[in-house]
Image 1 (cartoon, rainbow, N blue to C red):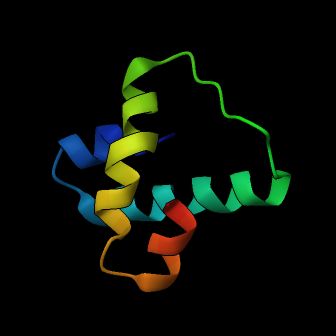
Image 2: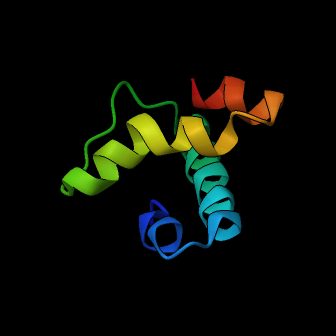
Amino acid sequence: CCGVPALYSGDKETATVLAEQNIKAMLEDDPDFVVTTCPTCTMSLQRDFLDLLKDNPVWAEKAA
């Protein structure tokens, strides 16, 4: 899960954990690109992850 349901329900903590888990999984697989079938997930990957992780330098760098 990209974390949008949690984020849009006001649960920023769960959304942040899910963002970190997704980034970790993507970095472990080292993909050339990421494809989603959900436009909301795409926007979350592009925008929400950066916003959720901006205050944590380690995760912010990984999200960039």
